[in-house]
Image: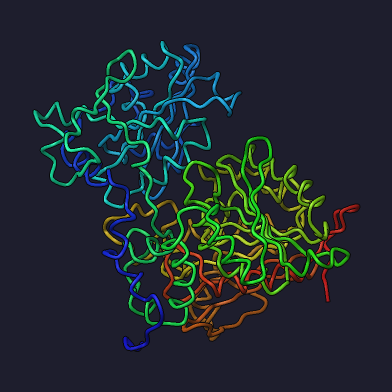
Length: 590
């Protein structure tokens, strides 16, 4: 590594450069988290007296959110006309409480109250305790039926500004009015202070306390944060530089002073320069690179397309399409800019005339079925080969990509999941039941999974217990060798590949092949490549029909973030396949 390797805009890696892009209420949110007292009392009504890890045996325990979601409690609120949803992201857990009626009308926007709540989210009863703690707020919602509440539960102050991402996602699940967003500031007054006294918080007016309103029939002291809660930062920069997205062995300087870092900055610079994809300069940016960037709306949901000008001039020549599952919704106008930055290499591939891009995702597998209608519209508008439709997504969007392909196997020719565990396991997003595994087994979905070797969940090697966690991180459910091997065997079964015993998986520790040894995966083909300054370890697995339709890739010294090399490799894999839309058969292209 050479720290003298520099390039244009390298300063964008520095946090200070983004100071004016950060949500103005970040300091206030941190203050609230630091000053709320955490209730140490146990849950008053434990199920069958169970507590702690013993709760994980309950049928309504959710692994991803580490929450016991008691059916009778949820039903009681439902009977009052209130919808309950429990989710997690980036080590933070959150709840949505909303009028049931609003779920049927995404066009009717409701004021939203954001409540930051310090609690012990390692306690499986944290969600039930949160509902009890804010009983008056929830009763207000049930009575008023004209607002929604988002509770963000954190074990410590939200220094990583996860609240921004959560609000963006919440406004996809429920129709929150982004022009009427309020923050519960009752903790400030309960501590005998005022907003004006909080030095970390600078409001747009000199006296923020005068702007506090009494929200709803419960008269919750709330500050209008419309236009203030959003950050206009870089997702890539945040995930590469912040500790919660990597494990202990990560070397940030190696990324910054590399060709990978240089390529990442091309996309990051977009996020720094543009706040909206409607900016004429943003559209012109892609036009200068040979792409027409277009916005569409289907059933009130926004999606984007990027089409090579050459394809528009020769519509008789059909191109493949990559459906990139990344947020471009209206909750935050900067989101679509982030999408183009995050998957910049796919845009570069499209600009060369190799494919068309369609960008869309919602935050629920059922809602993502709307992509079928979007593709029908895209087929009518653009020269797309319906037999070469590919889908890709990073992290939870990778789970959604595979889920969509499993639901629509005659539509999707191949899948790229990025940042997902090599093995399969049930998550709060996708319940990988035995039934689903057997369904996948019959689908023949070519798939490449690409991850960083120093992801926070320490995916590799599979052949031993996980190591390298940072002390601040939740280690997750795939820690022991036995857990990791079991999840891999589940992947093998789902993709119709021969099973491997625990002994065979463990034996890879002594393999002379570097990729097999470092991934801990018994493979039928393997390779180690060097691209843009880092090694990529590749293992291919042959299925029971003798076809190489499953590939695992890990990139040296990379955190939980997609990289240019990973996107290039995913395209190299997916483009090998087509789908016979009549028979559903996979076609291997020359």
